[in-house]
Length: 411
Length: 200
Image (cartoon, rainbow over all chains, first blue to last red; front, side, top):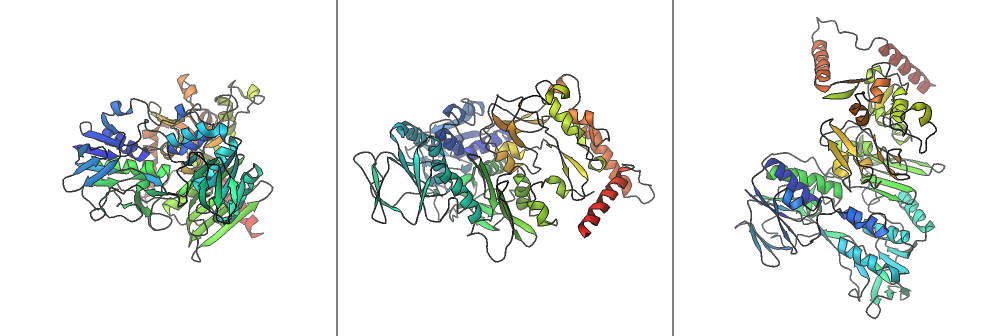
């Protein structure tokens, strides 16, 4: 059996290991344009912040490929996929035949529609090389501009603040992480960042970057110019399935997969940021481009590719963030765009403890929550969202700071 | 393989397991000196109050596959197969709380720990008292438990005992053996008190 895995992110790595556990003799090849050993992508912001050295980023040892008897095909992206002849061709012309193919090539950052983006010190923050370049540039950086208040924008801003850089964040909504959290939590996050020196500007965008060689200032949509010697573009990501023949493999925002992580084309699977699967809280197909999803989906894909039919119950958007002394956890439907009149919400805000908690229900099913501080019991709530178990205990108990698993025990 | 088995119906909420756990995971390993240590050792088993104030010793289940392990960003969480224990490597942990989001039982805490690098805040949870087991001792919580709510047994045998009990309970002729004499009464009283308080 010939297995080909496109992508050496955590979905691909987990799938490869799972396949090897169940198939000792099959040939496994992994294609990736990144030559660095498999590393933890979410941790690149900790690396930028200076909290984690680059040696700690790899998720597997240097012997990962040898140990699992995987043929690494590195330094080039998959460029062409022919489901008829079961062949993947890389950009540099290497051809790999497969019996089972996993597409786990992740997502690419969205480009910015503005002039001057080719100037130096304008970055995306998606891979380790970009962060390395950012760190190299840091000594000359006093003012940074972060475009976008999503997870990448937020993490870039936080890490740069920790590095002592003065950061201005441009966001459309009034608070960061508006796709992840509700307004109250978003404002709490904004206040924490502002108290550590962040400047937030809403309602303006960058028309063009200016500078000689390096970026020096940004021309804003209101006609003003802002000095900046670094810019980070965090306008979201989109699944990197450009090479996939969409007439043969069903795609929406991502590549559509069934409960076995199988695509609409025979023998081809997808997992991770590139895949689109049923979202448990939204009850529809959705791309949840997050690390824990990639691990779970990679495992399910690997099992099925190796011939064990196991099902994945569904994906869930979720995040946990620690910034300065404040922790935020969220899952499922809780942002303004995700909560509608069919939902019932319950909230608790404790100014003395500086905690906030919001639960979103549909009927008696918990479909989302956000918690600011006191997040240790968040996993219990996450599991309520994923299991869709009817909640028959009072909101009061779920919102209580002393809430714990025992509340669900019946004697 | 021997495991700590939880019998929630026997827990009276005395929290002696918590004290024993904290002192077992202190630098000195003795309660008398542990109380003056810095950082103050903290328990890894958590007795929480249930809906009717009955106690429940909430402890890591060492799940397989472990959701915390799959969610761990730096790969600090691993399984020690000889004792079937999910462990956290204090050197590798980056305190990102990804495991807090993954643990369905909420048993992971985040603090400086006597057994971690000095001053480093890390994720901390039950380690099945591996260090004690290597010395031939049983886990501290099970040793401390006076009511039999925490026992250290062969997991297969414990499972069979429970299965037999369920099997017996479905036969009408068999008188159901009292599995926790006295405890049922205590829990009924606790329940009555909470209900009275709710009515007030």
